[in-house]
Length: 194
Image (cartoon, rainbow, N blue to C red; front, side, top):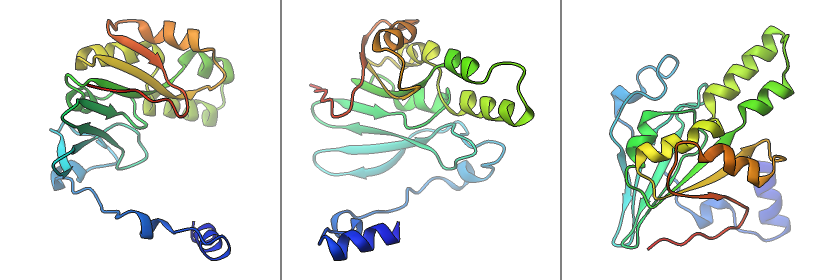
């Protein structure tokens, strides 16, 4: 990204990220990062990331192998809480992090679309990609049950694969096993808590 940052900073007089934000690594317990190839998301309690008088941020490892670490985040305020799944397959750590949250924003993939896009017979490379897609992401048909187990009051779907499915299909598929409010997210959508 250095070329892009330098071009924008020098030619367009934009600020570079280091002038706008303070980035820092999330400190995870050593035992949780001991075997990322075989267990990239071991069962763990959420880890504190940041806290001030307005917000508390916690995180946990989630399943998005071979990416490591893959993290989900919870933001708690006086008004309520919101959890962002990030890219993840089904993961108990996310259920723990999202316990009783007001809003769970969760990525979804369509297993039906994956099967249509990569029909049988598949080459070994295609099969490997299919397995990655289905293990590193959460199918719409089970995301509702994840939100229900977490006790999330509202489930917001995002990061759709494919993006071309109609909203009604996402909503119908994700509704399975979920009794709370379900929203099919859109870019720039605002959802209020509290």
